[in-house]
Length: 117
Length: 505
Image 1: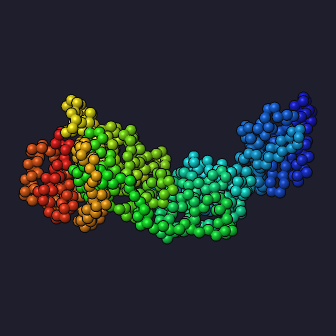
Image 2: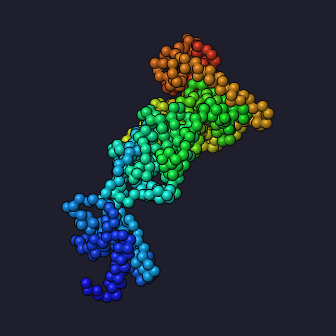
Image 3: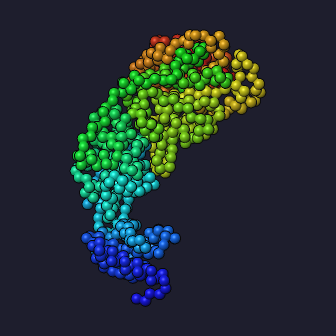
């Protein structure tokens, strides 16, 4: 994957840290950078009967607010639509959850069920 | 998992059972609330979410669907917070046990405590009619449940209390029943007839008005004591029966102005300001129809101070409820009937300056001014006011007199006797004021002498035609107060004297 520019590099590093964290917490990462007609989903991971669609937010500082504040309604809709697309034609046999993982200098913050459909 | 919990919806004063269904299932995490909820019910989501978390319980991360059945009745107000929260917990397996026979009502605060809601009493009464005997209600509404026999109402203060109740972790005692007679004994009016100095004629007129259920108009200069006299009317009305008290309390419970009181044991005395609108008097509201002042005055007194100052449309709206003793309020959300059986007491100045007819001060109004002032009150409304009394200023000697005259309790005894006679006559709660032409013919036979007096009064005082039946009804009441089966000439004469307004027109 070609990484261009400082911002994309930062995002890539953040996602890598998030995946590491998820694996450590017992999640199985199913998809990374899942592309759907509605946009991209950073990570799809599952644990037990939960499948989480995870948006990773990486910030080098808090200048523009906390990372989780950057996921607004349009982004939420993208995730919800993408999840519907991902499961289209299949029976949903799990609980689909939407999470946000904040990656910042000091560590990682996992917000479970950050928004709902 | 699916869970069902019982609750109640109110339409006017009538309750309809509502089933709160919660389904927790796989799928995308979401919270769906269906079943025609209004804004307050929709907002319950945030309250319930916080209340559950802050009660150290778990709000399920799942697809949560709530249904309020039947789906065709609009669900209003905040009754459903507690039942929805309990249904969610039950569906999530956090509480167990049967919840089928218990009706749950209550609003939740963010910290998980249960807030009081309006309309608990009518909800309990109609739920009892539907066969429910066990209830969970907010602790602040406990008093409202204390006067209903044969139910067990658990007044709980928080969501965790409710959870403990269903888990059987603690013993809860139902609300202790209270006796109405004790409430009645403790109730005291602040006014009393003995506080009113002088005004013998007006006092007598009040007694007649209450004895026969007649409406009354007090006209007199400012400061002559009209308001004080009006305040005495509830004090000489017969004590409330338990059924009447329940009826009143239901209305005030729906209106949300009960303020923790369990049952209203004093007759209401409502004084809407003269800027009152038709809706505030008669009742209304967009989807949730609330009773107006005339219903809040049910079984009591509606006092309209400065009658000509009220808007024409507000006054005209009183005509139909004055006849029917109920008001039917129709809105987009449906039609609701509230009882509105009250004594109307109106007061006014005789003219714009207020001194017309006074024996102490001169009137400075022109005849045209006086006519215009009086024309503000329509004939049809005046027609429904049987007694029109002039109240003059009181002389200083009367004011200084130590003795205040009879107390309300003494007058009440006479009123109660007169009411007893009427109960026997009509075999019900009807009063003389409600008599139609048929009853007048049957119960108010006039002797030849009486007819003569009436005819004479008609010609000399140029009374209107409609004044005749009014006079006869009032004469009937005066005769009842006098223990006379016949209407005697003196009764007719006295009754004629209470038609001041007709005479001056």
